[in-house]
Image (cartoon, rainbow, N blue to C red; front, side):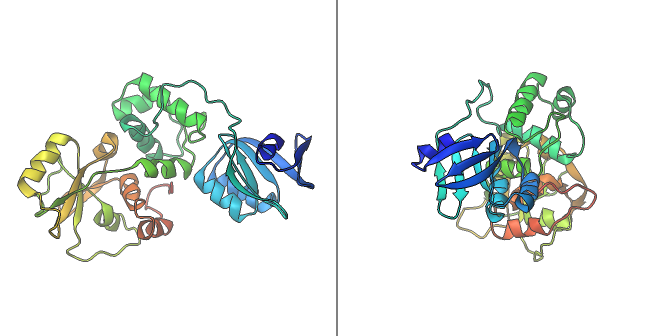
Length: 299
């Protein structure tokens, strides 16, 4: 901790493993491996004025700590400190040496499939072979993904997801490429999943949509996307009747909700929530007020 402060030209020295002196002020220090949003909420209540040092501090946890006046050092290379005389929010030399790993990008298709599987049943323990069988991916690759998630504090040693951290990081990587539709295709349980606003309405999220609200439909792969666009695609300048995209998660697409909306199978609540999360204003506000019926909230 003192080393990171000195790197920013702040006079500092370690007083003990649990305290540091910065610019003449003694500050308590607590060290952890990672900090989730839930853990940050507890720290904000009891550790105001102190500093949390961790290998990884999630984005939402950082926000909660800042509101609670708890300083933090993420050993991957960032420090935020709001003391009486010191104001710091800056990158610092990393104190954590990354372990060699074959997983350089976590939320590629297999990682998205793994994350959806964990978030659909967030209170259960998840074994590598069980997850691999469930999502139809190789056990070796699933093992690598789960190990990388554990290293980043997104999954515990039993394979249970850190909530809402896994959802939040997954939402940042959820980037469907939507294409406009001039007309809607006929509903087909084998080809489509309804998501977006109309999917949220079906799931009883706190959102209102008019009768002519454009439908957002997922298909499973490129060949199905081409077929839909040949018959129903629209020029981008026309008001669309809906839009279509390949679902970023093959497994997420394969697990629909139990019933349909006007004949279209509805995407599961995780996929719908990820779509809502792309709208940082309206969508995030809807998520704040949505506790999905029959499911554990993971956002």
